[in-house]
Image (tube, rainbow, N blue to C red):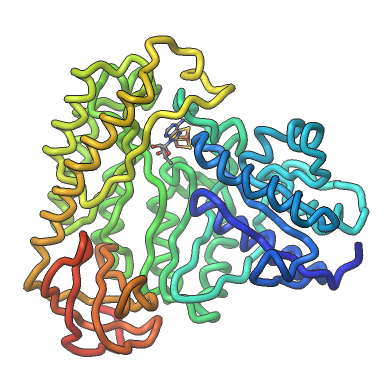
Length: 426
Ligand code: 5AD
Ligand code: SF4
């Protein structure tokens, strides 16, 4: 296979995978391959997969096997976390020749043109992937050393490797030149970032001060590694979005302990108290898992009470999915699927009410919005300075800033009317 052939990438899973697909695409283009937007047009089909829950794996596997049946003569390339976890099965059982884990992407173009795979345990510091639009991701670290007992990530993305701050700054500057207005720094647990003597709050401060980025944020934070310094940097910089995604996973200390999370419910509440004390308008979102082994009705009630008390702006809620190879897959006292489903719907029902109530409080308020693009149903969609999505009517340009008056809620989303366009962010 020679360069000049067309490739298509389908991405599943988290923001890191979205970023990695941009890395792979850039590597492929540098080697002379041409990106296309559909499977039909492509000679090479790349599937960037997720392994966090069984459902995510099943979806990707279904699509890969159906593509294999439909396009027997095309090259099928499987990458990402499932590729790492099920490498031998993909190769031996399903006959897929090209399988690359998250650390092997530099090998993809070379192997496709029949060279040896010669990169191992690489980092991607020298790759500044092309990204289009208003918003872009920049990875600051890869891997995870935390080993929460339910999580496959440390096994498939391996140990933490932090990126040079100078490379990060270069990438943000390049993105700004390309028209990007919002950058989201990515890491499985950004609070463990450390390069030379630079920690994450220092890195964040550096990016906020050394570049002209209009909006800056980061994903994901871990309650056991977060410090007050982070919030102090956030409050001190107008271009940092007042938003934090801080997964709690459970409202029961017993379950948090079994998950090996490294904090208690009380620790978590103290972080929220501190954050809201310093930044009253801060948007806080979370992740919650229901039906972890050993989660009794009482433990689940603690999670409900906790969610009620904290009032998250939004929560991503999941049924526990045992992942082979993780410690919790060996735990007994498993919860039935029916019970998990019931708990999940109860939790979603509660959080939906809270999300609505919190968004309702915005009615009558003015917000400065970064316009992201057209909304799903009707109108324009944008993000305020606390990371909240807002929909409004008008023909505002992508990447521009407008002042909006919030007039109501549709579904759970705040909707508004344009007050005026603003050329400059605060
Ligand atoms: N089962 C269910 N949810 C999981 N997550 C991670 N691993 C699992 C699992 N085995 C959830 C956590 C994490 C989010 C990205 O996915 O809530 O924060
Ligand atoms: Fe998984 Fe825990 Fe690492 Fe997050 S911190 S990626 S949940 S092991």
